[in-house]
Image 1 (cartoon, one colour):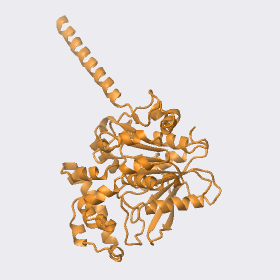
Image 2 (cartoon, one colour; image 1 turned 90 degrees about the vertical axis):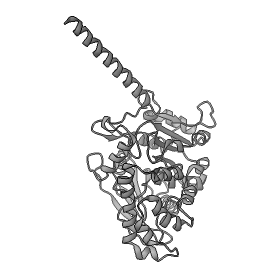
Image 3 (cartoon, helix red, strand yellow; image 1 turned 180 degrees about the vertical axis):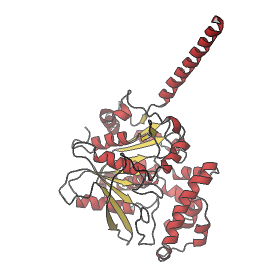
Image 4 (cartoon, one colour; image 1 turned 45 degrees about the horizontal axis):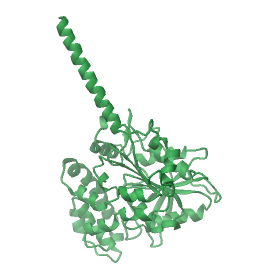
Length: 401
């Protein structure tokens, strides 16, 4: 019996040691990787210095970790869970917007959802953060509502959040034949200009999610030093739209039964509800082809590419990729991406370009999926703190210096 007891103790000790070793390796994997200009180059390390001085959740060795929720380990699980709880309301997300409709120069409509309510004080110095959602998304999404509530409680004066809903999204009426896409930055340009003119004393920042980050980065590259924005953030950044297009076109159980049907259904619903408006423009669409589509690439072939003047979706993806915009960004920009993202893979992150631009940085974590980044039990969104820290520093009167 004593020998058996010793054997059991030995097995238990070995198992505990193995679990401890695996936990140490796992926690080592959970460290945040910061990509930015070298700290030794004082001319080129502005954003790195800002992050290291003011963003402990990204730079403090004791705090710069992202440990995924135990039952959501894996990029696909994180991604699916994020979509599954889109409409959830809890203490972190339970907010009420005030809507403002803006008519664009071409007659199209963008809805601006404010939280807290829009101020009428044109001299207000309270920072304003513009949020741009991803494909088919809007202000109702769980992660956007959580972010709005978190930013409103950041710093002594808080931040006022305004979600710029795309044309036809989030119950926004489609009043022009032109629909939104990842190539056209005109709506974002107009919204930023409008807010800058309306609140000239308020610091402005912008956050883009997924496709919204692509639009934001293209805008930053086009505007350069002319932008009124003081800072910007991208979450699950789509640097290479062609790579994302290829991934989303691959057959797979969850892709074929969940992602593709959901995204295609949103596009078809928008088209069917606004058929006369879409047909009123100068572009001739094959509506039957759109309604037969089963994949996003097929919708982009028949709808998006034609709207932008490209021959097919692949020419559109190549043209709208934001990777070439990185070199021209002239405001503090932080990208947050996960290595296990099944939609915007980390292979598309232009590490060298980010390191060579003193205005850009990327925080890369091993887990988190696409627009997931859930941690803890119950699951909560990890990136809220890094985003709040970065914007609070970049929008401070001293500019985080």
